[in-house]
Image (cartoon, rainbow, N blue to C red; front, top):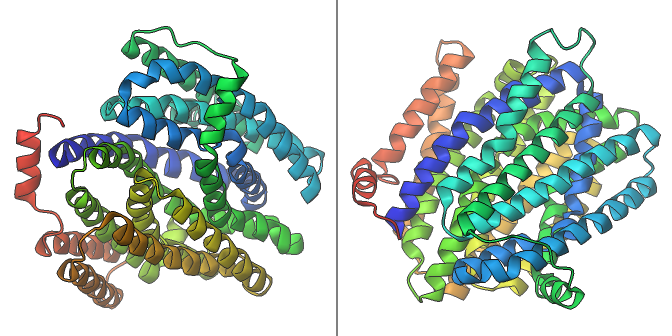
Length: 485
């Protein structure tokens, strides 16, 4: 299973590295630079509002579907009609609820029109995630990886043409165009995913409006739904709070926060991708009463050192990086970026250990941890945002995610009997201390910022192999001998 995981993981990483960074840095970043912090900040706040209400849109169906199908693949043909029907009904409820929330918050006509576009994007994205959950549950990770980049690849082509060609328009780029292009690309991607899934399952994938059957699935998904909602609140409410609590400058501060969060999102893309692979793998291993420790250790060894490097870059070169990416970045945005990237290791821990708890059916524990995260995050934001605006939200995120990371590790060891490995834990702490020392030394070098960052990253990656977190020999062996699970 470990060989199978590594082989597919490398393919998934390569495919995503070819597309998603281009989307983030070439398209999404350029759009923010073109439309300005205020307009993009409004868009980001609306996007996060829609994500928080994903509990209604998803209702835990994706997690539930992946877990059931990964353990019993033959159930796909039986469950798919009712699952798809439930998803479509929830989309209608979701759109209504978010519009009501938007009006209650105080958004005007212009913001509500943008919100309708964002809701369409989220609805199409939810359909895409549901279709992909069936593919990944069948352990077709390479196909899932290709489907995962379809929407972004289309956006890079179409939005890139609009942004850079000069043939489409000579007007100032508008945030509305950005939303419209995403809707078109997501719609095409969903259609392609449906066709692919139908072909590979060799069955007629249809709708089923048997209300009793649909309600039964929704009811079984409730624990997953509450978990999705609580996690969305403590991960996504910050941008909305910044935009609403900072007065006339709220939109601009939300834009600064979004610009800093973008790089964290890049890292989280890969964390989410790995978690998506881990859930069905953990589910199958646990169903067979096999040890999950090798996969847990391998995942942590790949994610955590890299997350430490990313956080170190932000800590020592945050302002330089932001000024390279954004036309109006300053020291303040560099500090926001540093605090947000300091959350990255905690997110990586969450992607491994909370996924393990989900696969082990410890949803009650996960919901309690997530609720604690919501309380901590909201209290800290209410206290810090009025004083420090976006920087306060970033600090609140760091404390929240750090606290939850320790909870995930503690409960994973307790609920799944993971063996304690002090030597392994100490190696990661020692590596972190080494990176701090390397970062400080790098700032003293008589070179420009880009050279310093490149040297720091290169030496830090070399240290990963010196600490034997990743062995070149073992990776080669896995790739050469891998024949599937």
